[in-house]
Length: 185
Length: 187
Image (cartoon, rainbow over all chains, first blue to last red):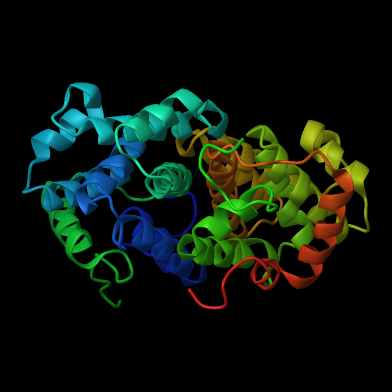
């Protein structure tokens, strides 16, 4: 049961968003710019970074919904998403994305864990300053979203069909509009 | 030296925000609502929560600037801010704020660390659902801002007067207004 009285029937962060629309607006906009807005990184790559960080933070709702969004971007390859979560260095993603995932994993542990060496490796693999910036901020932002979702003890149903439909919506439309129909009660 | 090429002369999060105005906009709007907009928790109380979490995350820039904003909101009581960072249970703050700081500290460790007991305690001391929500989100948001500031290796000058001065301005004018000096007029 959630720690506070969140609107019923809304899974994960959508419950927190409906409870407090004022904070939902910039939180949606931030996710939209980072994961869906124009970027040299593909939507699939950015969703994989979000999924990996959410997995490291052990947030079921976030890693499953963003994993579904990543799969929707990547030709429904949920096997790849699972590999990235478990052992991205052995997964068939680009060396540049591997280097960015290393940085994301360091941010997840704490900002000071990011090393000059890992940034240099990413740069050698072709990452630009903007891509490194966005990787750091995606990882940092998911340290917020994950804590928000689990810190309120939101409802996180284990319903693969729901996450798959959310993932399709997020991959297609981004984060400004709700991915879950809010049924008026 | 910062990990990426950030604009010169803008310490901490300001350099990162000037580098990427598109993300600066929602980042400033979120902190404005959480810490500066009208709320049943005072700005001083909310800034203390932000300062405490930033201190737990060992982010020098964030704990110093938010500590300065907190002090500016609390009759310039800098010693109270220090006490809250080091030992809030024995600080001269309300039992309700202590209970909210316990929740914030749990969020800092990880969302699953928040216990029903800590929430029940805060509620018994008068905290509303909205106040508990905002405490969780302030703590979560500072786990983002702190990582953003340190994760880019931003410049963080050891200059207390600079933070004190800016803290007074932010306490008075809010985050969005003050950010206009280093962000383009339209994004």
